[in-house]
Image (tube, rainbow, N blue to C red):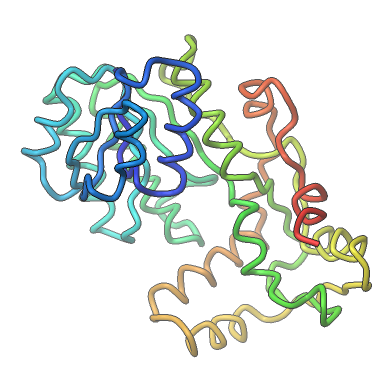
Length: 282
């Protein structure tokens, strides 16, 4: 039996959609805070159980009979996220789960520029020290976030971002979900750490060039990170602005420059590329 936390979210739900095509729906468990939000999943025959990252007792009960668990990283940041992830891992161990898949990020470390990578560093260590069999998907940045980052660059002809010449192995979220589903239903992934992204990495100069192919020429303009964060602070809470600014600095320092063929091998095809994705936006 396979269970997925955060099953009402984009990645969790997409993974279940792929799993339904590869295994019996009654062997799948969607763990969510509010079961009423995923009646579409229960309609497919998937078991829906309550699963709150802050409720250990309910998690242990809801994980009964589960062999493999996908721990989708939570939406909180910092110590709260690490605590929540630890609660899930401990509940999985208590419930007798055999194998935990965890969605991490590239370059996790205790002093990462991208704050989320610090959380992932600590969670990876908790998982490894738990004694549970693990598979860690270090998911690169989603292609899906590019429209937010690009803004009106295609119309204005100028793409402002503080990533320098750093490169990112951007990957489509749906491709990650399909790769997770494949790994969950095949053998040989025990105690593995996978870099999950495209086999190619792209700079923001490459992004500007790809946008130019859609019509108007686009120039990439590297701006100071401090100016970027100051602009973010006009619209976002300080912790979120700092997170995004740290992500941009991590890009500049090539923390996301992790081209890899693991996902390609899992999918049996090349993941969606930057050019394909941006062409479809036109």
